[in-house]
Image 1 (cartoon, each protein chain N blue to C red):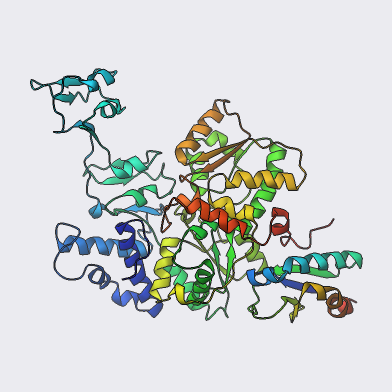
Image 2 (cartoon, rainbow over the protein chains, first blue to last red):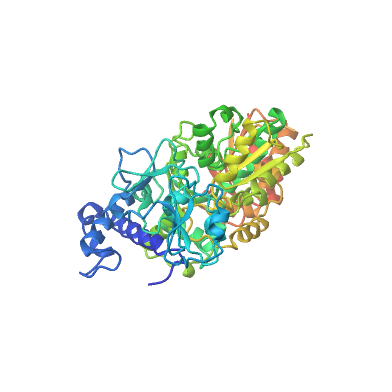
Length: 481
Length: 82
C-alpha cells in the first residue's frame, strides 16, 4: 500500500476506517456493510495490536461508529473509546531499578521538599505524601533512574480537561475541553478520536446531482500548503473537484477580510484578542469569562468566507476542510450555524480521496488563488499579528499594534492571566491553541518541521500582494471612493 | 436594475477579475448609474476554460478581458439601463 506520510500508525489506522466507511457510503451500501468493516480493518485470526483478535475487532467497530458521527448524546466532538484505552500507569515520578544506590544522592539535594528517602542499599524512594511532581530529582540523576508515569493524554492536555474514571479509563471533562484534539493526536493507542461527519459530506455531494440541485463548495484552510506534499497543491484542488465539489475557495480570503476589519476594531477599542482559533475562544469563555468582551467580534476566517459565499449563492452547501478538530465545535455556534454545513480535517480528506481511488499525482493541476500573502500566513504562529499590522498600515490608521503572540494554549493561558492582572504589555493577543499555529493542528496529516516555511512559500505565490487588493472583491456595491 | 455578476473564483481571479471589478466600479461611478446597476461576485461559473473573466448581465453570459471592460460596459450594461 502506498504510504500517505502520516506521522503515526494510529493515524493510519483511523484513516483506513474512514476510507472504508466512505467507500461504502459512496456506493450507498454503508448500512449493509457496516458490520463488515472491522473484518476488513483487522483481517484473519491472529492479533497484531492487542491481546486478542476479538478486542481488535471490537475496537475497530468503535472506530467505525466515530467515523459515522459517534455518540449523538455527547455534545463534544472528541471522544474516548473506552475499550481502546490501555489504562496507562499513572502515579507521577517513580524511582526505577536503574537506581544504583550511588553515594552522591543528587536527587536528595535536588528535592526541596525532602520527599526522597533511602533504603538499606542506598537506593532512592519517593515519599508520595511530600512529592509535588516538580521533576527536579529526575533531572538531577545521571542514570536517568527516575521516570515520570504520566499518561500521554493527560500530559498533552495542557488545560487539564482529562482525568481518570473509576475504572482507570481516560475521561474527558466536557466542561473544560476546548476540542483542540491534542489528546487524540497524542494517545499512543488511538483511544481518543474526533468524530467524523464525512458521510454527511458524501450525502451532500451525491444529493446535489452533480451540483445541479445546489452547489457544494469546499473551503480549504491555508495550512493545506503544508500537507499532501506527495502531490502538487493544484492536483489536490483537481482531486477535490473530482470528488464532486463544485468549487474550491481559500479560507485565507476570509482571513484577509478578518484582518482588514480586525485592524479597524483594534484601533477603535484599544485592546483585543483574536477570534480565529475556536479552541482559544472556547478557552476564554470557559476559564476567563471576564475577558470575553475583548474577543474580536469578527467571525473566524472560516465563518467570514462562508458567510460571503452563502450571500452569493444562498442554496449552496459549504464544507470546511482544515487541520482543526475544534472547527467541528465552532460550526455549532449560534453565529456560525447555517454558514458552514460540515467541518472535516485533512486526515479525513485523504480518506475521501482514496475512497474513490483518486491518484492525485496523476491529475492535471487546477488553480487556487483568492487570497493575499497575509491571509495565507494565518496558518502559522505570528501570521495573524503580521496581517493585522499590515491591515492597519494599508488603511492608514494611526495605531501601533503591540501583539502578544501566543503559540500554544499554555502561552495563551499565561497571556490571559497577565491581562486579568493588568500586567500584560500588549494591546493584541494572538491566541492559537496548537503549538506552531494551525500547522500544529490535530487534524493534519503531518506535523513536519518545514511546514511553517511551506506556508510562507505558498503565501508568496499569491497573486494579490496586499490585503486591500484581496478584499476588494468583497461588498462590491458598497465601495464608494 | 441591471444585475452584473463577476466571477471571482480562482481561475478568473488569475485572469484579472479584480481589474474587471475595479474598472466596472469606476465606470458605474463615472456614468452615475450606481442606483441602476447591482454589481456582485460569484465563486466560479463553471466556465473556467474561457479565455477571459466570466461575467453575467441579467443572467446572460460573457467572457471579457480587463482591456475589454470599457466597450463591454457601454454595449451590454449601459444600453440596458432605462
